[in-house]
Image (tube, rainbow, N blue to C red; front, side, top):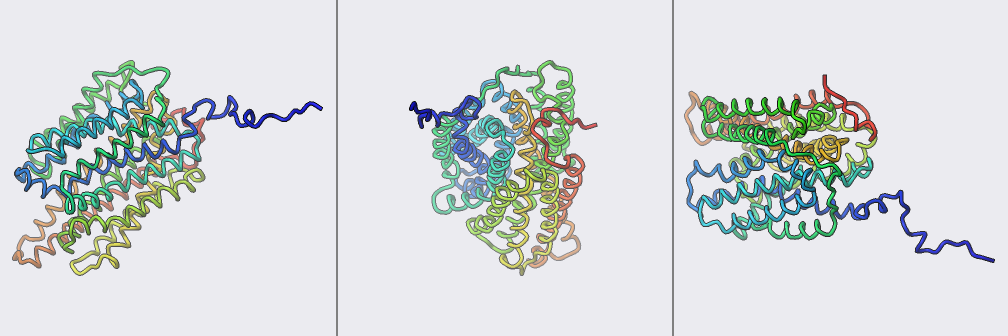
Length: 503
């Protein structure tokens, strides 16, 4: 009898309709996620890892207090103003190429900053980090967007990625304290080199080029106006802490930012190949997701910034102990983003998760106003910190998922860049607003009082309370607006290609 049994090697060969047959990189998608997550962690770490080392850096290089802010601002300006350009370059050149170039450039800039022997070279290195970070961050997110298209897998992947994005700042605080105390502040920059090296090797081996069939053309007028507008916006808010709101260095740049961004938006409606197609922002779910990322960026500084002040100034924590104090929140973000969103997002959609997460964060900010000079970490700081982390995790993963869901492949890079831009601008605005309000509250408290050590301590506590309350307000308003913008239910994949426009 003739056997009709199919040979094992034939049976194991993927059919032409399987994802593995269409894209050999599909089988390695989870390893690709590890590479993309590593790159994202490196970028997020640099937002906070240098902060704790600043006093040591200042003593070593001998620059003034007024110059100190530029170590942070140089990175933020370059990163924030070039993100949309970086996202579109990923669409034009290819996402893998842009990702690898961003990694190599970021590592080289970090190495340059680590060997800096003066203030000028350090600032140049930090600005270059921002430039290459603006290439790297949107390329990584757009690669994630185009790699994971199945709704169930996409939720898990974005849960992991969102956990990294949300917890990286807290990890940076700890790592910065450890490296500064036990090695050197220079390792806060050098640490990026081995991370980038591993990510480059992984990216070359695992990632597909993922270049769209039709490459969009580069909108030069759009690039110029949006880069100038975002630069002026971030720079204006950065100047608020130094000059105040009434100084032209603050409001003048903010007005200029408004003019440039208005011109940019008008150009996007009339040019043939817009840098940021209006259809991306006018989709309700994407608009709500960008808003959620913006709100998290603005309000989280109420936790990171002022809780750091509270732990170090009031409770006298060392930098390392302060970093360790934030670790439970980081773990809560990871747990919330990777488990709750993977289980709930495919079933109920992003709207209830984002709204609930923002309301939880708002409640925890109010809870933190009860902190005083006699509070203990375990009894008074830890509970709201962990619960706030759960709220942040509920927001970050579905927001990053929704912000890139349903975009055309040719727009994946710029849509991803808009996520990073929302977070960066939100962080800049939140820092300026909360710092100003807290400083004014401390000054007002001291009026008519003798500035004894006890009174000064109470003025600081009062200023932190004001910052926490304003953070709560930001989260609460964000919950309301996101609830109005985001649609109920789980959008089907075929629905997401059609824009649900905002009217």
